[in-house]
Length: 94
Image 1 (cartoon, rainbow, N blue to C red):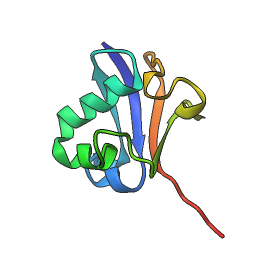
Image 2: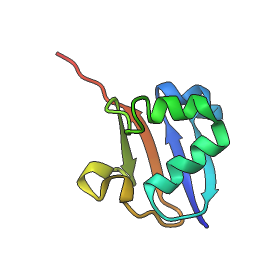
Image 3: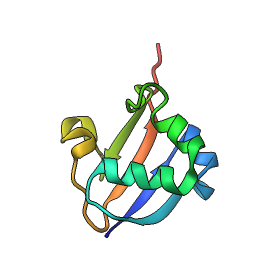
Image 4: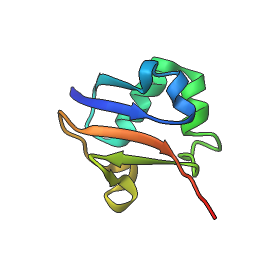
C-alpha cells in the first residue's frame, strides 16, 4: 500500500472535501491512485478524470511533488509514501 497526499483544484474539488486528503491505495503508479479515487468517489470522478473513451482528460494535468507527470512516466509514474499528488485544470490566458 502507498499513502500520498492528494490535492485537487477545479472540477474534482467538490468530490474531495476541502480539496485535499490523505489516501492509501494498493499499487505504486499514478494510474493506481486514479483507480482508487474512482473506486472511492465513483462515476462522478471517473467522468472528470476519463471523460472520453477511457483516455485521461486533456483538460487536467497531474503534478507529483510539483513535477508534471507528463515529464516523468505519465500515468505509469511511480509514487512513494509521502508524495504530494495534485490534479489541476489546465488554464490558458491571452
